[in-house]
Image (cartoon, rainbow, N blue to C red):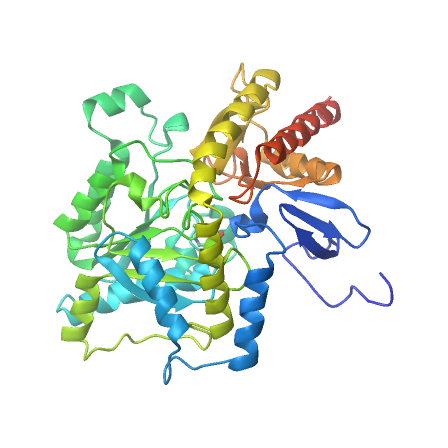
Length: 452
Ligand code: PLP
């Protein structure tokens, strides 16, 4: 690199150096040597419109020139209200009050705190425990990490984590409760649901503040949707025991699954939806939560109208400008229609690939949030050993060939289970999907050679 030292930055992998990206065009990122990478995972499932959209960049620049920072503890901007209204109108009817943060971890942290304050001020002071789910991810701050169930990310910080409870999320392909899918569904006696109630009763309902879940489990399981009816049962339990239901749509929000929010497809009204990533299509750090009227009314009545919480960069004007401009592009490009068309096309192409490569044991997901489960040998259901780092290695090969995927591991028990998420920008074309599948196909062939 001309004159630039690479000694000062560090990332998760302290020993690795990464290609230097100079710019992006559509679904492609381009590095300093001119090599193109097809961004088949929208970065971290965030760059949902791809790269180089001038209108978003210009809106951000205009705002920065007018007022770079407005402290939302003292002032507001019109754009803040406009964005909140747009988001509120996209959400289920009684969820229309929006609170902004910069990232998804902060959004979940805010939701957990709001739930706690809501109960405390309503005269239920003991309610403070959160029930989350294993193999789920809600962020890396201590509160959201405690609520999540990512064993690998939690491990080093065990003494720092909050004493939250966890159940397993439904994963019918490999049920963590060892139930058979058809038997379970026909009997309507779902262990993944009865375990929630058992946990609530063991903790004491008077102590439980919130239940948090991703509508489709993203990074930890590789795009696993719930069986139909699961969230209706969860909603019933939350109502019965006065528990705030938080649906984490940080990865699934803003069209990723074919509807504005995946919540529309799980058929319930949560108390809080958290969002991030797609709201600004990755053009600025922007996230937040959408809160049900009953919680806001509770705070107005019981808490002197105050939510005891806040961040310096809540509703940052430049990020809000990015959000507004991005949501306009989603509309203009009719992204939802494209997801409904390209999602099934991608799945069909991946099912073709499954016929060819016995490393693929499952293709699942919704819209353009699609996961493939990787096994060593599908016929014998032989799993990869975690030390083989199959998903990571496969992705490494793909990057060499010019496409980036989102690898993950630990879906089964925190260590075993490898997967790859394929989540291209929502305006991806048929031809680009063909290119994604071609590179994946070639990657599997090279991978097979390496395993021999
Ligand atoms: N929740 C979900 C479902 C996520 O996928 C993520 C990030 O991947 C987060 C929360 C955390 O968001 P952030 O990395 O913006 O803090």
